[in-house]
Amino acid sequence: MSDSATRSEPEMLAEMVDINVDFVARSPYPTQRSEHGKGVADVRGTFRVLDDLSPPFRVGLFANPETYDATIRFSNGAVQKDNKRDTHGFAVKVHDVPMDSAPKDDDGVPFQDFIMLDCPTFIMGSMSQYVPFNRIFLDAKVSVIGKLRLGWYLLTHPQMILLVLRMALNKPNAPLSTPYWSTTPYRFGEHVVKYKSVPATPNLSHPRIIGPNGRRAALKKQLSGGTGRFTFGIIMQNNAKTQPIEDPGIDWEKHGASFHPLAEICIPSDQEIAAPPEIEYALSYSPGHSAREHFPLGAINRARVAIYAAAKKARRAAYDKRQ
Image 1 (cartoon, one colour):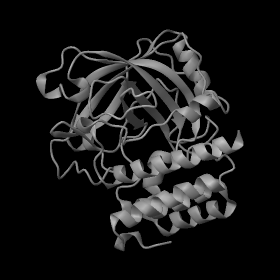
Image 2: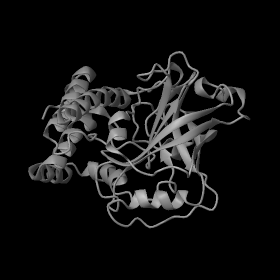
Image 3: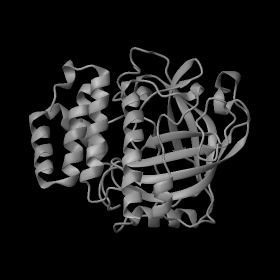
């Protein structure tokens, strides 16, 4: 393992890409993502920009009060069984957005991604921590020796234990019942922000998570009562020292940053709740799937953009090979 603390960012980025592509080659499930491999549900929804935003918040996608179609993916971070403790993902792809700098899908339609987790902070605060941990963590997914190495790494790096437990031991939750955070920062016009989605479904039930597909079953039960809703917004940086860009391990809200609602995410109940392999193959999310006004910031985000692109290419090559 290389000494990440003495290496340049491009060197560490290259190593991270190699680690994740190698994981795809070694995994017994090479068509799954290296991160958030279990798709709990891929669902359609809408993303409605609120009509009463003040001028400072009318930036990029939020410039006008419009409603857009969206594709939403709920996921598990590391485990396949929903009833096990884990990190849980909430990714939102907003379609046909009115931003010239937005990426375009295969049909030439511009879109914007928002990627969030059920934890306010990222698992690592720096690239020097992220590189060695990512190698050991992914190795633990595919080998018994890797699991032993991960245990030894945590025993010999006790400062890492709380960081890992903070995310990896989240209780399994009903998908509409928990808030989600981007954990990493993004540009918002001239400002710096993190994203957050807060549950907003009236009279929401909170089913227990039972069995390997319990979160999917819980989502079905929650939507049986009607449309699921989240309030989407930003946590705006107001102190660069206590809310730094380069340490996503810091919870900005605990250091004085405020949440500002910007939009409503709605998930209709009249749809199948599943994660079909062909949809999982077609769907791709990345922090880099952003318009200039909402572009990702910081070294961790730069690493994620590179990793997601390389892993997506390797994953799809593995899928095509199996057809």
